[in-house]
Amino acid sequence: MSIICGRFTLTAAPEKISEAFNVPFDIPYSPRYNIAPGQEVPVVVEENSRRLLKVMRWGLIPRWAKDASPGSRLINARAETVMAKPSFRNSFRCRRRCLVPADGFYEWKREGKRSTPYRIVLPGKEVFALAGLWDRWDSPAGSVFSFTIITTEASEAMKEIHGRMPVILTEEREYIEWLQAGDPRTLQGILRPYEGELHIYPVSKLVNSPRNDMPGLILEERRI
Image (tube, rainbow, N blue to C red):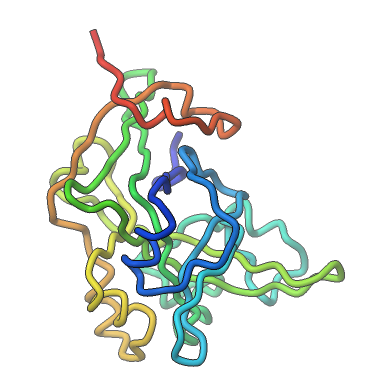
């Protein structure tokens, strides 16, 4: 796996998600142990001063796209260029920002010719947010809501695994700022590496396949 933040998990109970983001939980849901690009997941958005949970496809399709093909490429947006890139800047400036609920994410560490999967969680945090952008693409078959996850340079703890990491938000103040703020300086201040404690542990290589989505994937795998 060469992309950063190409998989994540959301296994928390609906009431925990609702409480963490102060949002009503009124969508179909089941725990997910290996969320992959192209799949649909719940995200938190703000509309008319109200937070809502919406189901969106992972992989941003800009509203000006001629077809859905950009979605397979735009699963991540770099924090350093998100305000300038044509694919992302309109969503960024027009407050089409979202919180992507998660309770862990996967990353692959290069070890020679091998790649070893690791899961990264935040001790004491049952659920947190990955900063994202969303858009609506209108096709002849109907509207498609999609999102991308923003990445930044890796924290000291993450550098052992990869040079980048998703932007992690954990506090209500950060949620409000990300969803509501209009000042680019405020927003850029949010898009920084997470410097809190991380628990990083190896997991089964079964996570390599997006077809696998079962509880055993998040268990630590002992290395001999």
